[in-house]
Length: 93
Image (tube, rainbow, N blue to C red):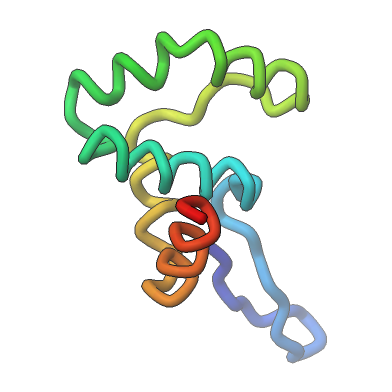
């Protein structure tokens, strides 16, 4: 998420207020939400965090740790419905 703030010269600049999650990672969480029916309930969160596949993916791509539950949910909620539909249609082809 970005916010606008006035710079000293009177121009608008963008400030990043939180770490941006990679688009591919967000699409993975979108698919997991569809499979698990939730990203925030306890069982789904445990399955995501305990997943060796996700841990290896994050490690091999230098992404650090799997984002916390609130971050996963927030990022997926920011995807427009049109984009969600497109991702899911490509995934299920």
